[in-house]
Image 1: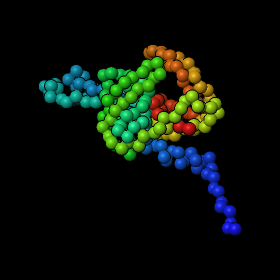
Image 2 (image 1 turned 60 degrees about the horizontal axis):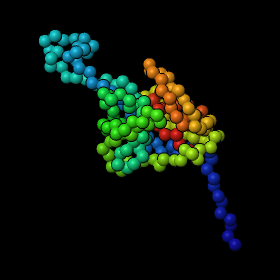
Image 3 (image 1 turned 45 degrees about the vertical axis):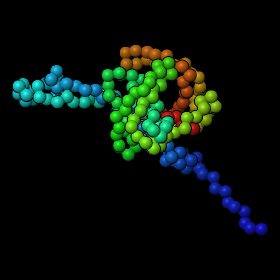
Image 4 (image 1 turned 135 degrees about the vertical axis):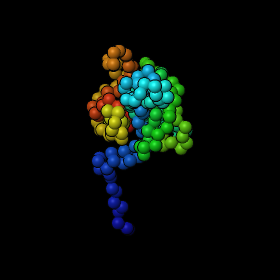
Length: 199
């Protein structure tokens, strides 16, 4: 009889690192920008003679950001509706390696605070959506996203603190009711919005 096989069970820390390594490429940063005409606001960007204002090109200004993640290999991305609520803004998706793609908003759902974006890509590293009805309070989760809209690929860890929460989200001059929210104590910062909560 040979020696018994040694079963090596990864530590909690190693498990977290393995999950992050596996899923981080699927998470994207979303940059929100708007076009500003130098013709209408030349004093902000131009110090030359006024006769040259007519020939100035428009510029883009970043006005916000958030997170999202691929759910299909052909470039479908899930994010929060409030990340892409400005119908006049332009949206750019930034991958983990810094590659950028212009994004088109396909749909927005205000009651669930969800939106679907599309970028022109093939073989995107997509995540599989879980069953939120199977979530257990106390379950360990990771949040990955673009913290403060400037620290891409940020990871935090916590537990599920509650499910089916009804939240009145108040901010930026308005309020909205969000149904069926998942509560977690994982640190969530502005800019993390739209990123995945991974079990």
